Length: 158
Image (cartoon, rainbow, N blue to C red):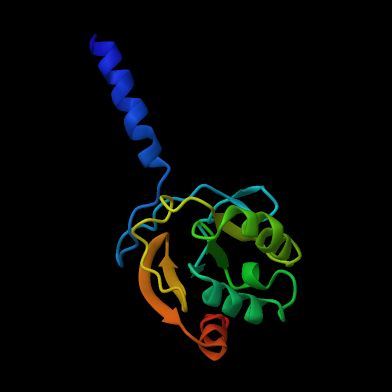
């Protein structure tokens, strides 16, 4: 009986370990294990210094407007990563339009299709959430509402 309860407890809590917790300054960025737009494993590396998080269509369009004009390898050179939350998008739209559009991009995009995965992440559908990291810990959280603000955030850091 005790073994059965332990097994049940593990089965009930295991899915929670796959979900990211809230993003808070001073805390480690919650681990994410997602797929990119090519259905390949996508994770942040220990070298990542900046995460661009788009939780809505306007924010995603803002990121694409800035990144589509950059050379291949631009995000990697800046130690940056792009994460898109597509969980609120209807599946048909995601499969038919959004994912094919992302596959045409020369950079990797971490894609979240489950609304539970990024629950607790502060987001504004019309702004890009910029999460600065130092040694895997969140050092600053800010938003970019314009292309100019996003370009500024992506300038090389000393």
